[in-house]
Image 1 (cartoon, helix red, strand yellow):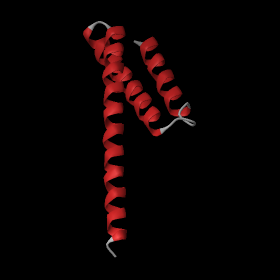
Image 2 (spheres, helix red, strand yellow):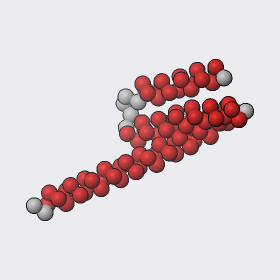
Image 3 (cartoon, helix red, strand yellow):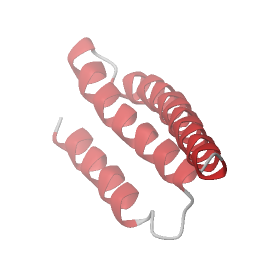
Image 4 (cartoon, rainbow, N blue to C red):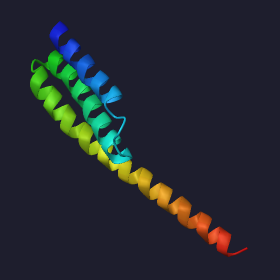
Length: 90
């Protein structure tokens, strides 16, 4: 359990400090994957297979991070479209 926790902490610290030159999509996808892997490892450790839990959690987190990024981009595009429409009607 100690080794798993150390691994999770290493992955999370790399995710936090390694995101400096990444795009928003890359940051959100990586962060989702790291959080998913950590949560999956913890749940998997309780269920008996930390490795499978981390793998499944990472895949789920990556998908969730990417979907969240796409949602944020659509909100931003809608805001910009509405702002632009408001500027042209004045």
